[in-house]
Structure formats: C-alpha cells, structure tokens
Amino acid sequence: MKVFVDGKYYDEDKAKISVFDHGLLYGDGVFEGIRAYNGRVFRLKEHIDRLFYSAKAIMLDIPMKHEELVKATVETCRRNKIKDGYIRLVVTRGKGTLGLSPFRCPKGSVIIIAGKIQLYPPALYKKGMEIITVATTRNLHNAVNPAIKSLNYLNNILAKIEALNVGKEEALMLNSDGYVAECTGDNVFIVKGDKIFTPPLYAGALYGITRGVAIEVCESAGWKVEETNLTRYDLYNADECFLTGTGAEIIPVVNIDGRKIGTGRPGKLSKKLIKEYHKLTNSTGEPI
Ligand code: PXG
Image (cartoon, rainbow, N blue to C red; front, side, top):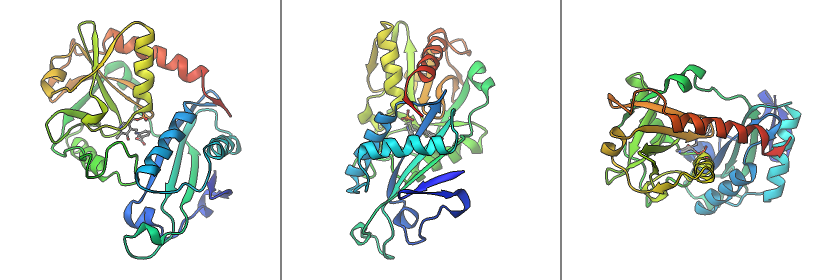
C-alpha cells in the first residue's frame, strides 16, 4: 500500500510522522472517513468541505487547498488501485514541543490512506442491529463540539466500549439534557407513521454526510424528514429505526435497550432507503 504523507507517497511501513506530532500527543487534529464505490469517491467534495470546517473550528491551517486535497485523494486511490474501499484523510497539528500550545507547531501534516474498512457482516443488514443506550454522555458543544471530526474520539470510544462489553455493536449516546444525540459513528433516524424524524444537529451530533444523503433521498421520494429532539421513549415506540454513516451506510436497528422496534425486523422504508442509497453510491462520485 502507498500512503500519502505531506505531498509524497510512501510504502506503508515507511509512512511515518513524528512522535512529537500533537496529533499523537494530544489528539490535536481532524480527519475524514470516506468511501469509494465502483471506481468513484462518494461525496468527496462534501467530506473535504467538512474537513475544512473542522480545521477552522480548531484553528488549524490545512497546508493544502481544497482542490489539491481532492486531487491527492483521488490519486492515492489510483496508486492503490482502489475501486471499492475506504479512505482516511488525516490532518494533524504537526510536530511541536512537549506543551499544549498548538502555536508551537509550525506546520500541520496531511496523511491519506486508501484501503479497506472492517464492515458489519452483511447478515446484520438483513436481520437488523441491536443497540443499547450508554452512560457516556455525548460531548457538550462548549467542550469539544461534536460537529468537529477531531482526532480526539475518546468520547465515542468510551461509549463503544460500553456497548461491546455487553455484546452490542453500537451505542446510543444522549446529550447532557437526555435527548438522543447519535451513535458512536452514525447518526440516528426513526420512522413513525408516515413521518421520519432525526435529532437536530444541535442535539450534539456530527453533521453526517450520509445523514444528508438519507434526507435528500427521503425528500426526493416525497417523504418529509423532521429534525426534532427525540427521547428514548420516541425511539422505543418507533415503527422503524436506522443508523446512517459512511462505514455503516444505512443499517436497520431492530432492538434498543431490550425493546423490540416495530415488528422486530427491518422496516419497509429502511429497506427502500438502503436500495436507493446503493444506487447513488454505485453511480455518483469523483471518478478515480
Ligand atoms: N457521527 C459520528 C460521531 C461519526 O464519527 C457519523 C456520525 C456519520 O457521519 P458520515 O459523514 O460518515 O455519514 C460519523 C462517521 C469507522 C467509521 O471507522 C466511522 C465513521 C465514518 C467512517 C468510518 O467506524 N463515522
């Protein structure tokens, strides 16, 4: 595998950054997780937009322009002969001193890895997923804003550990007011009657690209999506529930905290949405 680091391509065992990089020392940096399907990079522009927004929020100068990052991402896929794969774009604060100040790090580093991702087993999409609510509260906006896709993922990792400890693949996270925020790597939707609901982004969620695509697909099919605060009660009593994320794509949830959701099997709308999502991933995106 060839890995892009600061403008050059290295064999994977030669691709390195300094132990003094604040990305490692403090989790100071931002990243994106992007998928390629059928020889195209899906929603690449949107991912790079979000990378710049995350960087702006933490006062990090990305040492490349938007279009240079698009080109470098596509080129990294090309060099690794990726048709279907997963791309990890990372911008670290760069090499600095053993002190917190980011201003002692003269230049950020850009890393692009194009490889494969560990996906959920296909059977889980047919059967649906069981999740639990965890005690770890989603980050507060005025602590580390959940909209920032930062290299500091401990909030999500702590939640994931709670779920994995009891044999569940995903954890539902609430915000400090007790409203549903999101899962550790996915946004949450429910269907109730003929309406679709998802928490507003100010509930404490990442501005998910897949969330945006799911809303577009629903609305172009004539199904309205309402962004509103949701509680666990709303989720337990939903007809359908599904999660959206670049890794998970769209995955039905059939059980939350031991409560069966709807019929206990993936719902009609979720199944239709999964089909439409695949149509888009297979036919749109930046050609490699
Ligand atoms: N919330 C959080 C906290 C995330 O990390 C999403 C929502 C969904 O956003 P997108 O833009 O992907 O629809 C994410 C994204 C992985 C992996 O390695 C995780 C994500 C994306 C890609 C891979 O598990 N999380």
